Image (cartoon, rainbow, N blue to C red; front, side, top):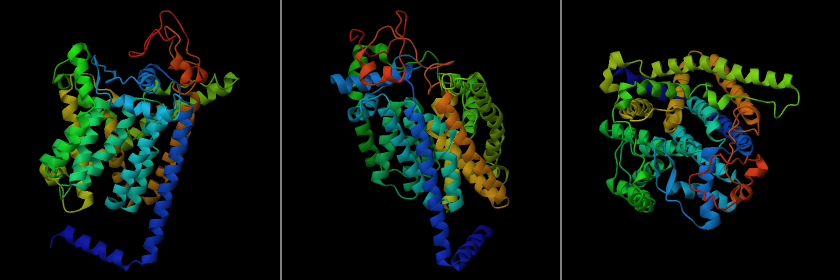
Length: 478
């Protein structure tokens, strides 16, 4: 009998010796903590969502949903791609149009985004209840659900915001098939990846992670389920294929080449984003605070802006060091165990989870190395759950020796996230009408959609002859 088996036996004996009502009380306290985290996160997301303004990307998405609901026109492709052309498939129009059918307001699809993120959290928490200890489960809930990046992604309509659910489905379905292939889990995995790529190409990161997990035998797939999910996911592509046959310029073809990312060290950028997803160091463009439209006096506005800069530019880089320490902890045993054993799973849930994180991380580096386009922070959003889980597991391990310090750190995380959400809601460029770097842009014409969806009522859109225009919205509807 080896040392690890002995330790597991001793731990099981200790747990059996604890009175059942004591364990039940701890479990109830953990569940109450999870509920509290969920409620606070929903409240902050709702505040941000209801104050959200509309910029170019949002107008492109809203135009697809509005055309579907108001005129019965289904746009068979998504938003313009950064590489040229457009994102394949018409699933985006359905995602945006569904909520607009229930509430004709530009914020309705954003509530749909929040709904997908709530489902993602519930799936991840159900997995955490089975795979993690109570302390690690609560830490993960805090670090994921009250994550400033997650709050930001719930606060405005954007394609990558939907990918948090795809990431949660990936972990859930892989976990369900760690020992035995299942038809339902394989179907969900294939369907979520297939539709995820139609929402945003960043879902490819999870596809590469799946390949790595299969190679390491951490996941087993039922190929009939994969085929069924793939067929359903391909259905929205039929109309898109007809369009690109007639208009080849709609293909999202990059001018770059495969392997460009390796030459330009894009994997380094990818590592940076992975680490920053567990920090308060949000992108500079998203944190150009300005409180002058809200506050009459310039002095309070300057104080509020300085507070925002302290959180993002002061606390943010400091939390980056904690993220680095957590990821070093993830790979700490490679010299003793070797790479091969680090990338395979032992008998326990914890070993499987650690191997999942390592393989997902390495898979993302492979995608960044092959990428023909510049890697940006929103392309790694599907991995936010994995980045948060890495820090949660490391914090759980640190708490065995420094439990008070970890508790103080978790409380500080909650307080800082709360403060940052308020700063974004009342001073961020996506949540105020006016001020510096506001996302509301001039349009060439007026249009009924701006009235039907309450866009003008929220923040009057300037009309200028040289203004911008959404790619699919007819210009003759003014």
